[in-house]
Length: 133
Image 1 (cartoon, rainbow, N blue to C red):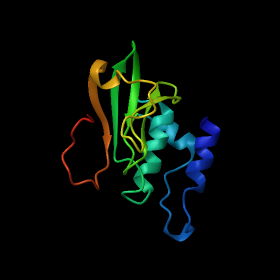
Image 2: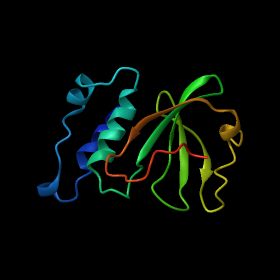
Image 3: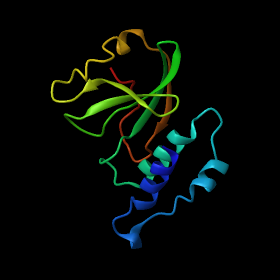
């Protein structure tokens, strides 16, 4: 997963002349934020250098099913909003998609989640941070 993510970060720029340097995976690791998994920090770094509106603008942390999980809402319509476990594996999509009802694998997420924490919000976003419903 880390190798794939590092390759994605490296290849994110279509026009190398306009590419922001976010550093190597080792540099990202050395600047790690305590309590936030490295895979998520790398993902956030990628979001921050991507065109606003084409990537998620928020990352939320919760407790769900006895574990820490991360909910990342998609940037637009008809896309799944994914829930990740602490290791970065997609658990399910609690909402989003064409029906808005997600993939049906964690239909109780919004009713049973606890310990809501906004982990990151894109500074380019102008709306106030509201928890996903």
